[in-house]
Image (cartoon, rainbow, N blue to C red):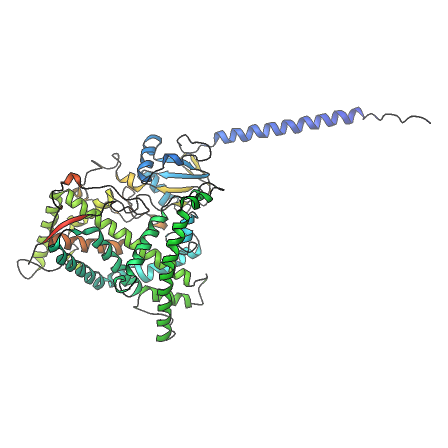
Length: 522
């Protein structure tokens, strides 16, 4: 029996094999080099050095991130890319960069990131402010503006504003004889009661649980700005349970949900008793939302959770932002007595000119506010120094884009640091000083066209309630200055007045403003 012969491969096959292998290896090497070279060519905005895993989180740790971010932007530029764990965050800190995000490329930067606190507190983003960009947001925002925040609707609330301001003035008058007045608290109640009357048909002080819902909604607003590890580090969400943040969010949500559920149920029952109307024209906003729930022609699901989310959004945002600005105006007037004197003189001159007698002792009405230019300048200056939201609500980039020579990757989160822009010495003379005169004769406004002053945002995501809030602020401040003499309590000096903001998505004074008040007219 013969042994099997060893079959050697054909020399041509061997050469072909090695040639193909060599070509394949060279292809892989070249491809890797091209990809590496392309990566080096990609130019991202300047970034601070980051740590493994946490990125730049340690550099914005603290209660007031807008201040930390300004310090970083001073070193790295007005367009800065941070890495918060696994999440890229673009920070715009100049008018030009704010314009790029909120005007030039607003169509790409108009969505919202999915953050755990917002999704929990606002019913999976069924509100207006935190809802992601899409058909639902467009329709709900359009509906809310038309039925609540249009110029016609805002004007129709005139009697409510004047009645509630009058009620607050009487409260202050009765309390000032018995000691100092907590101005911050009174302004919060005022904003809450005006807004709740418009939204719900009656003010929260008439509900047995009015104080409770104010507390939980204020708490919810603070939690919307809370830092949750799970939003930035996948797999580490359990830490939010350990720190207790998860529990606080759930507790706040449940407390508010129980009350809101009762409100909506009561209104639905009232609507049913009154008849199955498609519209409740001239009625409270919640009734109008209920009519939308009944509308079968809508293109998106709309039920009780949608109503609760929108009411909670409007009540929280409207109250917090309005009373925050009024509190800062009063604090700055106390810190700048010459400004207070000039404002009072303007108000007295205007009211005397329109009064039948030589002195007007009554409450100022809205029609008298139109030509109070110094009042408007004082409010603008307070908005510049103390924007109610120092960092605008984060946006999310919907597709990769370029800003200048920099590439910004899709899904990057974006914040505009309006607090830093408002205090930029390249933009403002003496930026840290309270100088309302800078706005006299100036065309700069806060309605989203001038990017050096955008306390309410700009573009598609601009706050739709600007005029709604400003009318309350003007009417309240004019009457407080006109009808009372204000002084710091006891032996407190102006230098002792705390002017630091509280943490949260809105930034009121961290210490309540407590003042002595004396009625100017008997």
